[in-house]
Length: 219
Image (cartoon, rainbow, N blue to C red):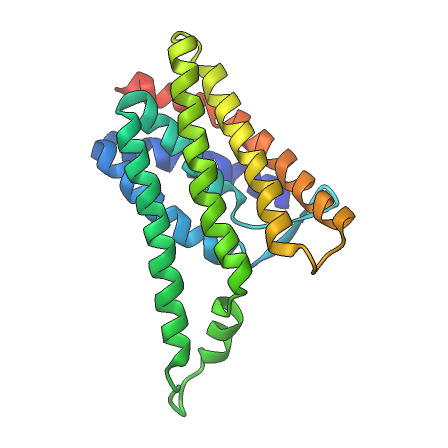
């Protein structure tokens, strides 16, 4: 069931990226980066099993940012892509601060959701800082590699898309998992978690290539 839902999620999510860019141009990409990072940070709280491996929900939405940024880099400019990344970081910081402030309010005697909000939004500071930092660094690396590969291989869209996305995504997985969970899990477990996430991200990255071509064709 999870595999079927995963395939559907990839198709639907990537279709949304193409659609929002078609309707709103680069402003649509700015909107998507902001929305997807916030939703992904909520969904990542849920763990699921796929093919016997445990991973976090939200991988598809996080990966959609790489597709969105590659569309931005291909159809608009490197500077626009950097602005989109900064907007994504700003969105995560706003989300983090506002949810933590919300938890400080004393709930009413008739409140029924405060405990659920605590479960969902109570954070580990180190994990949050690692997440935001690696989001920024990995996406900056993605658009930098995409730009350089476009200069070297102007007619090989699929190569620059896959190389930039896979390299930056896998590095993000390993560095984030290490910094977030060192001292919590042993080294072998950390490598295992990062490797499983990276394999899934590679599959998702390959799957986003047709959507990048579709977006370019629709222009």
